[in-house]
Amino acid sequence: MPSSPYTADRPAPERSPEELRRDIPGWGADLDPADRPAVPRERFAPDATGAHWEYPEEQLVDGYRERSIEHARLTPVFGTSVPLKGLSGVVRRLAYERFSEARAAHWLLLVLGDRIDAIESYAASFARGTPDPLLAESGVRAELGRHGLRSRLGRRRADSAHAWMDPLLVAAPWLLAGTAAVVVVTRLVRRH
Image (cartoon, rainbow, N blue to C red; front, side, top):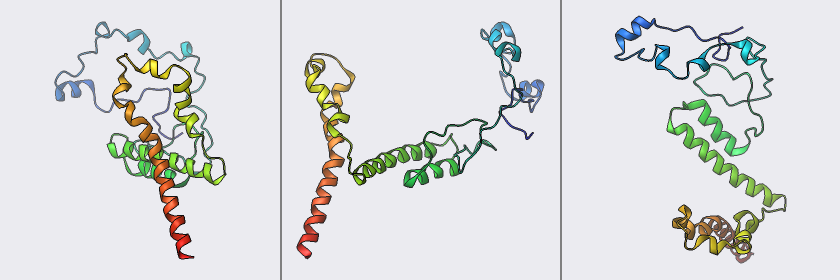
């Protein structure tokens, strides 16, 4: 079995406690169990946990799976609910293949991938002829029928400061797309 961080055993320390204490001021200050309140829960007791394996059975890999560059291999079990697809998948794959999870670029690319995925989903809903219901998703109907105005006025809600821009942020992409469609259709009609 290859060396892996996903075993039940603790990894062997690379340097001895004496070397660490010599090189790092204050290292080992919590070695005395009396100084650590969580000591009973830190005990390695596989019989108490019910673990029945030394290394967990690995899930089958079907195609590409994103993996942090900090790890030499995939975790034994991983999520498969949303496989990478389209341009958003390309951006997410770039985040995993090029940048460490400790870098902001990794997380910013993942956020960008989520935004691209949202746009791809909107486009797919239009292509299917079943666009997403804007009013239902924005919560406007609930605001009108469930005491929305009363709940917003006279209270010190955290979202009151930006409530004025929420309709703009929700509607702006749709208004821009609609305007672009009208401009394109108008130009095509004028040419013919």
